[in-house]
Image 1 (cartoon, rainbow, N blue to C red):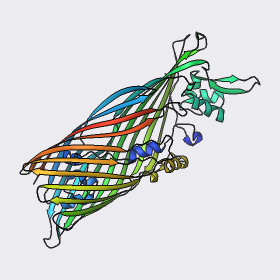
Image 2 (tube, rainbow, N blue to C red):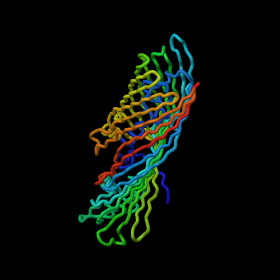
Image 3 (cartoon, helix red, strand yellow):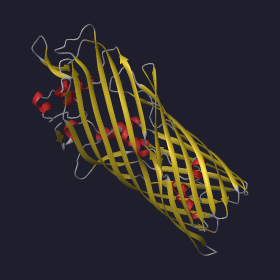
Image 4 (cartoon, one colour):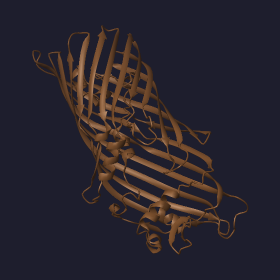
Length: 496
């Protein structure tokens, strides 16, 4: 089919076309840190302990605890299981991803024995989000509701001409395709007034389905510098560059069941819409942290993370197909839009306390606060767009969360065993539609082997989160989805 490249000023279609929203802001602001096997086994809880490559992402002062140089390399296997409940039916899907969650190097230098005793410089790369996920659900809608209904509402509010729709001059992301393929058409009432409506209006029920395929990742490459003052105060700072890639393919299909025999000349039998979103972006941030050692047993730590300032490019495509009895199908043109925008994620605040029992055991507890309602969209230099509506939605829908991480390590030289727990609060406020609870819990265990300057570590982590898919605005049912991630990580490291 003919491809149309439309570089559109999206402000013409505010509220009527595809645009950014609080879901996008949350996606790139919520961190699901994946690091070394030791870090993952302890639930990512190292804020007051330090001396661990992945923990530098949480508290940069971790690098100040180092007394030796180190290189670590990790590999991981992630399985994302999705259990979906919709219209009284259950569906299961899973996706598998192999990745490198962490690689890093720390170089340690001796200082003044009576002052700053050690300095360390490090560079590393860690995965902080894995977007890989697939799910599908389907059901029978007997309430005369279609995912074309929001398009009908938009068309009747704006009431564009048929010619403008056929040329994709207005509402190009969905409504125009529906009109082109006769999913929606112009009708005339008894008073001669024109109005838009679904082409099918006498169906008995609609078999509806949605297939979603998501891939991508968000990672951070960082440079860190820190020092150790008199084995009491450890300071550190990071500069980080994040990169992200997110791709989402959605196929929504409706099959129409008529009361009696359908009219072979007019009745539509199926409508399908395919959309693809590809987002790629780069951002930067700064982090500062400290660890204070009261004595051999107790330590406290704290860190502050600046917002990450992203510039993101998105490519979005839509194509629709209608099937009738009298022809095989009618397929619309592919409409593609490419544009840039900026997003500023919220700041993060961390506080930690650790207890070390000789060489036998250690414990760490982290507290983190993030206010997701402070995320903000902004226009890019060459793509001006009014994001006031999206930013207002963020302030109304998202809220601050209290996150907790706990980890412990027991040593039985040359072996160690570890366990951890991580809780991330619900980022949605109480006034959000449906009040979705997207809190996330992660349980982890692991172990390792250390001999001289070599270590080999393994970990397993299981995290679970519930969320909803409304299917479309005004849908009588929503899909309830439980995502369960299984992450196995292996790490090798050398110190000298």
